[in-house]
Image (cartoon, rainbow, N blue to C red; front, side):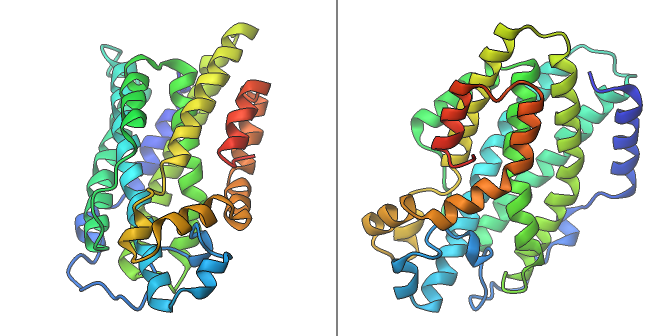
Length: 291
């Protein structure tokens, strides 16, 4: 469990710096279609021949659809996260700061999910959901995952989002309300990542080789499905593009692969330090372009 003093510091930080998206985000100003929904460099088609052929309006629309897709995937995983944390702390000592921090994180995630949902709607996007088999795998994972498998998977999802959103929130080409959403998420998720890292280390203390091998595999499979679900295949048609061509070029886009790998350098170092970067796990991380 997270050490008493670390949990206390996280609670203190939450009291000092937390946001109410209802008040902080400008929900009333109409969407400015002259701005992007995300930094163009993070677009799955950026740097391809198709991107070069697209009009500026098409490029901006695609970044808005992709930002909405990332937000929708974030909601899906935040719902998994909340259930795993609730199950982990069920019937534990409520006077423990770690217990109180767990509830604080769940409250944060509830606000984030509502914020992402409103943001996606304002971007003019439909509800993007992971593929059916991924939804069912997520249903199974949230029911059975525990200990380091649960917290390391939480960390993977949060770390990948954190790096890209830090870019988006500083980018003046991105529509202001999206920048505000990203800023809120980055600030509050930094505490969640600290919590997940400490829990992962604590749960692995004294773990044997077999346990590490099994959990390394489980976390890598979860990471693969989370990352490959971030941008839905339908974003291209919804942006007015040729879906089949866009999918082919996005799949072969080395620029986007490089962006993902760079965003995960610190995460991979952490997993390796915990003994969770095994050969079978590496195969999934490579398939997801995380390493």
